[in-house]
Image (cartoon, rainbow, N blue to C red; front, side, top):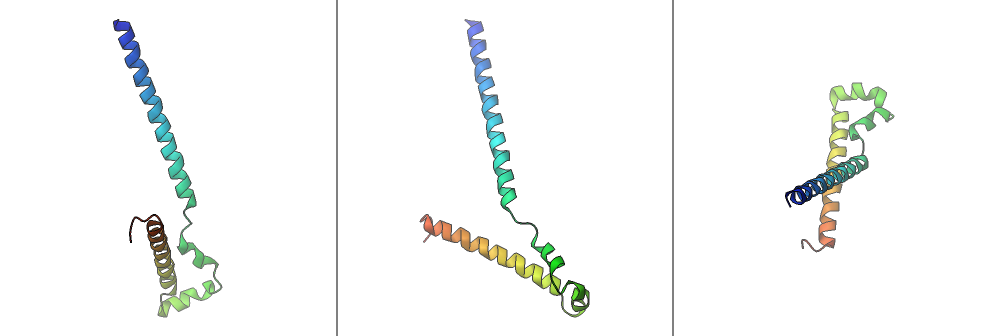
Length: 95
């Protein structure tokens, strides 16, 4: 009787360990997929613009690289906000 109880506890513990490993693997796979969907840094785009050779001179008077980077980040945030809001409206979570 004690042997059966010990085997049952062992089987339950083994099943819980397998379930934990499966859930953790799924979490890692999902998080890697979501991170893979995210774009690269928008601040790298200024290195490939036609004004890049003159950027140092222009930045002396106007911080164009900072303004472009900030505008890009702000625009990305606004797009995410409105996308999230439209999904919530579509799912009738908000009015």
